[in-house]
Image (cartoon, rainbow, N blue to C red; front, side, top):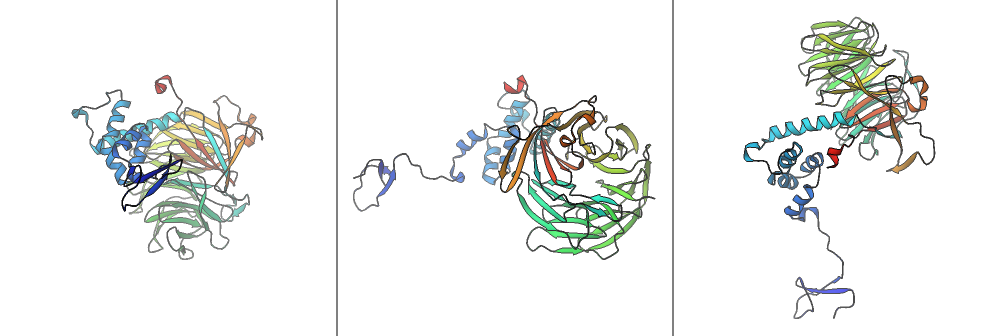
Length: 465
């Protein structure tokens, strides 16, 4: 006989046991654990129906069974049609093909990304590197932990303390550490799912991410005082102090081509999707050369004659953008080689980047520590942000996430009339590099801090309905 608080279960039925069957007792109120694979499709459909379109897209990529449920019940089509003001169930004439639906959702995502910059950002920062400074003997400039790259849910940072760290974009946990060979300064780097590619003084190094980690170095002297790097597998192009761009093959680990791109040191590079190398020099020149032929296609000159510090190419619009040491941001059309706009936005522009697929906004940062959002088509500064001057104490919260201490702060929007020097330097540390993700921007500041700026679209009365 069962005791109080227990249920006697025999062959799946509640009651007393009889015969030779096995007797299983369960405590009243307890439930057997059920895996997510065991959840009924109708229940999954009800859960998915409560998500927004971007969370629903993420769920469709989790596993095959979830993708089948979402496709079977046409949840993405229904939700997209609803967002466009249509009925809950689209008619057969309005059904999307998989390709057209993907394009529509991407367009919607880009619009949400653009609108998110209208709201105030939440900022999370953590110490990623030491503050030690090292001098690049070729440029006589201090080298800090001032580089960052963001993709595939990961952030890669590195610089002055001779180590590159790979962080989780979700938890900010340090997942991997890769140390530099000898005492050579790290100049530039990039990564993909299998490896990290880095320019270390006059050598190219490859750190394998999966399996055995090892460093492959190029032959000594094949890269003459490298100053910057642009990487698209299987090749990395290195801009050098002697005005050349040297093409490095990842697999043969040799310099396969040398292209004369400029008369002065090459400070920054960008690669187009049609095999063009865009290079910016210390003399204010921008040149476009063929990657395969090595021939110069065009030479453009900035009117301020300042050092070109950063270049960014948008394959969707065929526009490329440049930032200079005089604080100018500029835009050219690669098809016509014509200048579309030029705007002085800061004292010095160190980094400009845009989200892949976005043709509306581009983010810029520099020595004044202000994060600026520009219109790609006009060059107008549509928003500018610094950190709030929050005092240490209750206004500043910190939490421990998987061993990383993360400080949370609020962003503050400033106008074109704001006197930048009146803002405390602690609220606007110099931005040495930035990377742009969906509704977020990662910046490296002061050689040791990494900041995540999270933007949200401001809610309107229509959103709340």
